[in-house]
Length: 213
Image 1 (cartoon, rainbow, N blue to C red):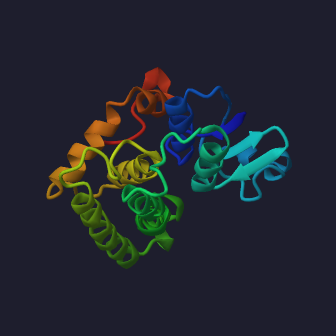
Image 2: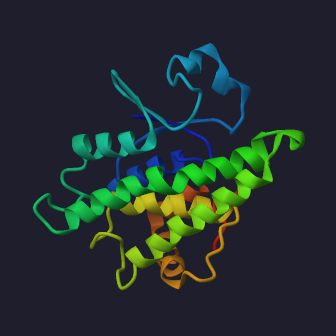
């Protein structure tokens, strides 16, 4: 299987998943913002010219959460998902989707307003509003991991989705000072060998892809 990948993106989730499962993969590297991501060849793979994309024989699929669910359904053999009849399963679903539904939207706003837009087009009101909202979203995660090693019992794909989103929040300057349970949770995730491998992929000298809170 081929993973289209750039450091510091949601594609880290996919390499992390493959490493956790011990699945073989091939990487097609980009640097974020590469002109080649807008080439006709790559736009035929991902119509928005973004990463990640997974190509598995005749299947091409993008959107990181969809890729995670596809890989687990086809190759996971029940790993990294709680049993559907267990009380952990709805918790798993909740936090799996919370990552993209609640945490990433304010992060996206902050990135657009502070990085992608030219200075004269930036709006500090939007940044302040998104920063406040992101703090609220992270407070819920702090409560959700309180007293737990991982978010839904044993380590699962929800930790991959949620952990990467929270680490991305750290990169845009989210304040974790009042969220000790979340900070400890992220520290546990960072110690996983599969995360370390994914985190260093494509980084010079194995550099860290995410700032720590």
